[in-house]
Image 1 (cartoon, rainbow, N blue to C red):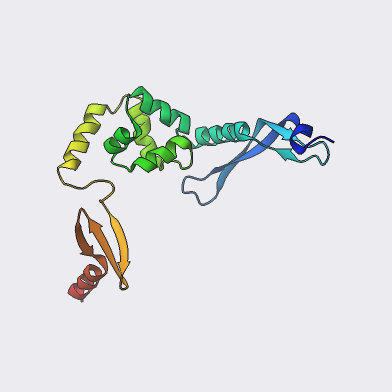
Image 2: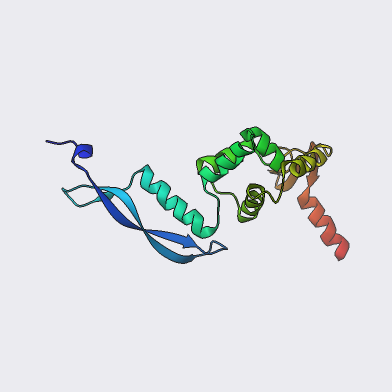
Length: 178
């Protein structure tokens, strides 16, 4: 008797790709895409592998106008930067860039526009470096920029080592207005 994996047949399946609306509140359109798949002849069940998932992901990214994880990685490599260096230039956390390159997360549309501008040569590294230097002189790093916590029922925002009690500030503004 054949094992499960050995009895699967290679086929081409047509799978739906749901393209979300710009605000993410619904589905703008559904596109059918042909991808390689595996079918179990015993019960007719169709299985997709990582190759099929990558194809579906590329189609979705293209229709949404987003760079794919591979394009994001190639951009960084073309610029000759490490993940840490590009994260510092874009003033984001290292893990954020890694998640974009691996496809675990997608950049927001606004960041995607910036990445396209960088990819297309509309923004150069010298400009990003000057922004990063300007940002560095403030002493604020992406990691320390905004840490929001709740302490004793109050919202506290920590910025570069100093704390600001947002709840008390809102209360003070409301009192000042009345």
